[in-house]
Image (cartoon, rainbow over all chains, first blue to last red):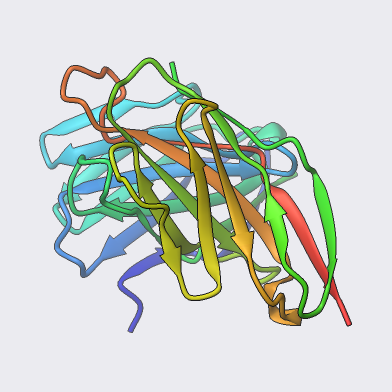
Length: 114
Length: 119
């Protein structure tokens, strides 16, 4: 089984709808992250959490919210989806904040907002 | 602030040849880590190699090596003996390490280089 899972893997939704993307991990890591990927822009950080009680905004948090329900679960919500939120969304985890700790990525959620 | 620059949107290489993917970075943090990830067409992000800013040796992982030139702030990925399966998007990323850094733990990505290996 995958260490970092994301649900759903694909989603098409309409403008104005609320949608939640879920991430679960079995790696036992405290640090979790949400990124979005747009063609030609690489990955950009939306939110990150260093433990259940610590949640921080990334560089593009507007229009998004998150919830860290448990050490293993980190959800991303779009309260009112808009077309420019169409992107590939990744959840990631890491063991620590030391630079040498790589981030482990989930398989991604492809979101389309029409 | 951290910044990663990948100036090659696309690269082409013939099978079995070596290829270098460029990455330059900018940071004021004295301690940091540099990563390369591979993203095949299926979309997943695959970790390839890591280089610490204080590492004396250039990192190597199988056919991947990192040409780290600290003074020039460059961390180029070298893939030796390219294979058709190496065709993918490659991302360079950086993470600050010093505890004083306001960006501790966050990973910053470049825009990626699309590598195509042809037979």
